[in-house]
Amino acid sequence: MTFDIAAILAVDGIASGAIYALVAIGTVLLFSVTRVMFVPFGDLAAFTALTLAALDDGKTPGTVNLVIALAILAFSMEAVALVRAGGAKGLPRAALFYLVIPIAVALAVRLLAPATPPLPARLMMALALIVPVAPLLDRIVFRPVADAPVLVLLIIAVALHFALVGLGLLFFGPEGVRTQPLTSWSTEVFGAIVSGQTVCIVVAAIALSALLYVGFEFTLTGKALRATSSNRTGARLMGVRPARAGTIAYVLSSILAGVSGLLIAPVNTIFYDSGFLIGLKAFVGAIIGGLHSYPGAAIGAVIVGLLESFASFASSSLKDVIVFSILVPILVWRSLVSVHIEEEDEE
Amino acid sequence: MTALLTLDKVSVSYGRIQAVREVSVSIDPGQIVTIIGPNGAGKTTLMLAAIGLLPSIGAMRYEGEDLADVDVEARVERGMCLVPERRELFHDMNVEDNLTLGAYSRRAKADIRRDLDDVFDRFPRLRERSRQLAGTLSGGERQMLALGRALMAKPRLLLLDEPSLGLAPLIVREIFKTIASLRNLGISILLVEQNARAALETADVGYVLETGQVTQQGAASELIGDPKLIAAYLGGH
Image 1 (tube, chains in turn brown, orange):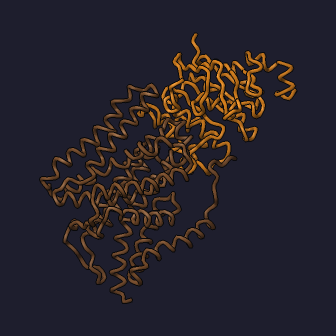
Image 2 (spheres, one colour):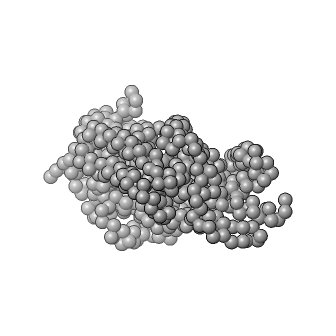
Image 3 (cartoon, chains in turn cyan, blue):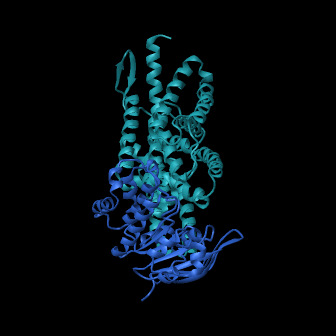
């Protein structure tokens, strides 16, 4: 391997690593706040890419109907729950959040899609359409079992992933898509060509991470999210509702998944079921970071991206095998270095 | 005078085991009420039910309002606040963030800075350690932080579960001094304690809870002189 090739592979690896980093950060955020290992996270990214591709063709993306169906289902469940609990006065708020906003977004996209608006508008439309999906799924699937053990939540998340892949086939069809790059500009660094797309990916990943850091560190809502992941009972005793914190976490991580989907769409061909591999690689990155540290997850994801890139040079058919087999030494190392901390340590 | 909080024949069960049986307790505004009793009598269970973390049967009223459909978070918004036996601090967040989160339920966020200073004045140790993670604090400092965090919520009723548990005698004295001084802020307190003598010296009214039932109740000053109690809990002189 020459230096030139190594540089090309490194650039490539950092680009995909940055995408995995966004997904990994979202995975850690969701897991720590809601205790759900949200397996379908990569599917959200893939769906965003497919939505953008449909919008590029001036077609109505399947996500529109998906969001409308989920909104009706989620609102019905919330309404029944509210009326049963005698809290009918919460209905208008629930209707706004679970019904009006998602359906308004879906209808707006459906109305605008045939006109093929300019690219920035299409990006925003795809993102706006994907953000409600996870919070609605949370209401439908996870809220009724909010107190279940982590393992049960994980298995439900796996089932949800398979359901979403099926829905993806139904709504988007079996064809793979690859969208136009965000920019055709490119530059040369150490002999390797760095495309504008790669720069966009890395800049977006850093900017979103910085934004999250500021939010967690300096806003009361961000601190409430951290408090929920640190100690749910303690947070409840301060008046922080875990369900509400969960919804905020779902919205934030959906934005991360959506952005990573938009960024990966011009780089890789995305099929309705491509999300799983993205999610799984991000998961490996998150594990390297110990599943509770955001910088750790980001660094882990970049390691995965680099490893994947160099592995594909060594043997493209075995690249996934190589990436996933590093899980074994990492888990061994993790189990050796991390002290198992009981949920509550009493003095 | 209407009571601030009344528990009327409240029972709490874990599965088929009834941990608290038809307990009735009442706290008037400005009062400090203590519940004493041996380990496993159901004191903590009763506190968790009062704040809404455990389901219970029987009636609970707060400021005249039925609490049946009011969940934990809504009770906190209405001015109830529990300092649990396990403290439930945010260990991987610093002291100041822990305190700031105490004010989460308050509508008026404007005075948070000033209240933070008040808490730091009350517990100067916390000011020294304001940037330190809560998980690195000593036992006494953790209890101060738990108390301070609760005070940030500006509660009208403070539920204190074993605030002296596991603390050195010197710190216990300090904690009880703080509890007594909260009366001046107009905070009513329901205090659960194994340290019966200190609790009765601080409180106006006392209840004795044994195996889930109230076996004795009365003015704290009378209970403290009761020969039976002295033999059982107060350890003589």
